[in-house]
Image (cartoon, rainbow, N blue to C red):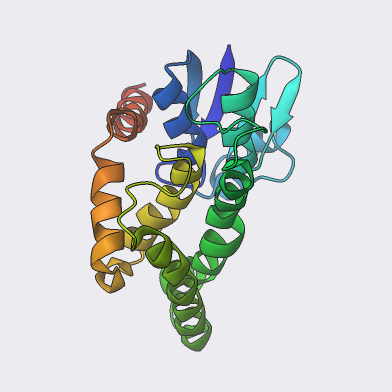
Length: 212
């Protein structure tokens, strides 16, 4: 049984979404954010104290985009993956990691200095919000030629990775800067059954945790 440690709408939403898209059985452990402070026992699972954490037999992982890649390749075949002999394979890998390394990284600083430590470094938050938006233009350019998805002509794990960055942008109130193409892309993403199922799963688990 795959086990996923998750905080609502944190980076761990990527693997949760992938699990739902693939219909894989899993056990969800919902934690308060940040778990290293509010759930000290979690450090026994993941000494880094970061989210996500995933266990699959003897396999342990803590990087959200890598977990998406792992799930759709190790537990495939799945349309979320792009085969190594597919011309879109390189683009798939690039977008999969672009979502985390290029888009989510600057957002974490906006999150820190606007929500967790407001008033401490507003200039930093503003600068990194602009950094995120400038890099989001690459997504806009890709979608601007009429594409529905980022690569391979279909929804893949790359869309999950980039899609989470759009979810976080909405939480940070940066979605008002979305171009029409990116807004339409976000609308398609959040309308997917897998996305809705992941949202429902985290709410259900939270409800159960609060009732015990």
